[in-house]
Length: 283
Image 1 (spheres, rainbow, N blue to C red):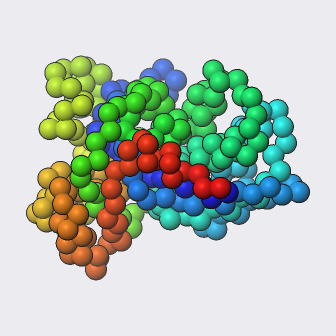
Image 2 (cartoon, rainbow, N blue to C red; image 1 turned 135 degrees about the vertical axis):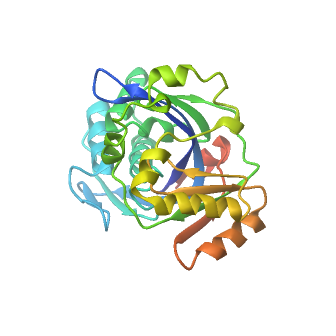
């Protein structure tokens, strides 16, 4: 079985404030995109796992997803899993979370167990805040820690140019930079906004200010994307990946060519929900 774990971008990301449990309250718009890790999953005599370039132990999100499935299904999983990483880590693209969610989906396709449906969302949340989105795909709104997700209407009438600046920003570190009080980063400031999050004219990313302050080259990439014809450019997630949105694929390719000598670039497209699930599993 071949599983495709597609990346995501955040079209909008607002940090409302710190919660009592230590996490941050978020509102975000997720969008699945056509760039994926590949996961080969097949029956075996026992559990075998390999993922070159990542930890190959119990800390890996894929292994954690296997253990979570075992507990929920009350079985021992005997599979061989090999992960081919294409999505760079620490770029705000959700590759590890996608791998976990898709592994869980693949195991259910393989074992076809009768799972307690009402417990699955919490199992996915326990794996990571972004993981529930990858069980939904397409475009979705995220609330809470970003782990409460709701379907939004798909819109796939644009192209995305991703720019990898070669900087890895651990998520926890990025959140630690949000400690300075600021109207854009607290509940009071968010509630003062009257525009709808679904209005693309007001989409923003509250991580840009603290991340750009520490990595000013990312701000320069954003400006360059806009100068190269993107109608919108932003940081994805907590970074460091930058994205530009283009109306025409030819414009995205042209901009990518202009940046390719200095950065890793990827021209891709948003994935509507129907296509996401059509391509996620190949048996």
